[in-house]
Length: 257
Image 1 (cartoon, one colour):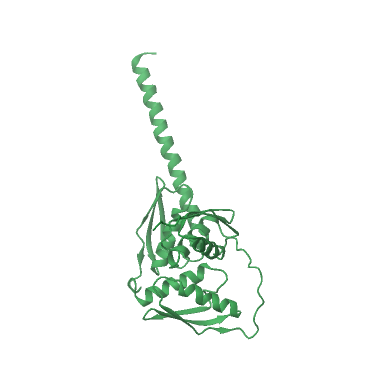
Image 2: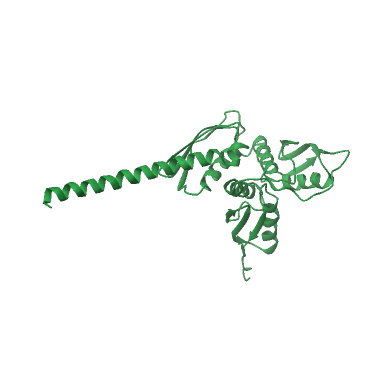
């Protein structure tokens, strides 16, 4: 084999390697885009929003518009939790009429989001308004326990100073039953858990790593004390789709005086 022929063969090998790798990357990007569009979060929470998902070399760019800030964060967290995604560029725009950060309307949006994530309360049947940091809840609870839990969750949202619960209880209260676990994909469960912990005042500062497999959520990180660790477990157990919680968070050792 002469030198010229060897160079030609080498060039062909390089070309095949490059184009083969590009084709494989392109297929992976298509898979990421298709999978993301079919996730529970995008087919439920974000179904009425105009979100465009584009993946290039496993870096996903989100463009379009969403109704509020919680949905923008949820879209990013969901895609970031998807297997194969290296990073997310969030260019989503919030509709112009959405309230500015830390205003009453902005706080109300976070309260609504928290109620939607938890299955033991009804985000759909609960109206939320906020004035001067005081959240007023209206609607119908299925029983007294649900009404009280709605108050508890709303109080724990960052920015809420107090809660006025004006919800009524159904005339024929439903007996408490073990909640049915919705068929929700692991990626969406992870995103919901992350957002729930971010919006709850008592857990937002914790650096908690979340992984989900077949509905079972594993938590790692550090809690300041045992009570805080138990609270995280309680909140995560009530997130839609969660079948079980493995809380492997460590408890920080108390600092010596």
